[in-house]
Image 1 (cartoon, one colour):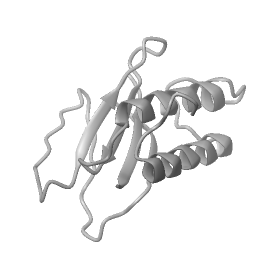
Image 2: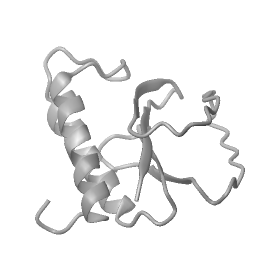
Image 3: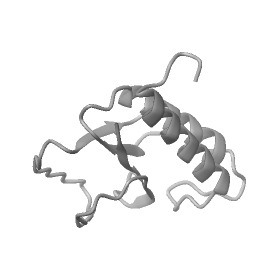
Image 4: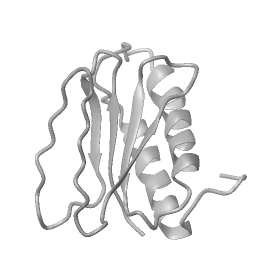
Length: 126
């Protein structure tokens, strides 16, 4: 199973984080505008888009592009929120609504994506 990309969008609709985990051979244009109008075309049943918003951070959207057969996307979104809370929000040099530039956030996100791809989902102990 494959997780293609992870995006974090602030409440103003600005892209504050982008990580391309797996880049397919065919490049697709990525554009964002506010309000976030999202139109997806089903191309060989390759992409599933999952949105996540947690109650603690109003307006922040976590977006995961994944293979439709990938299970545990909801658990992955919860894990990404946890990583965002632990490594971005608790960073004294990070300002809300600004791009995320934190090495620990990057490392932990990559680790969570590797676990999600290998296991297919997150268990209760992750």
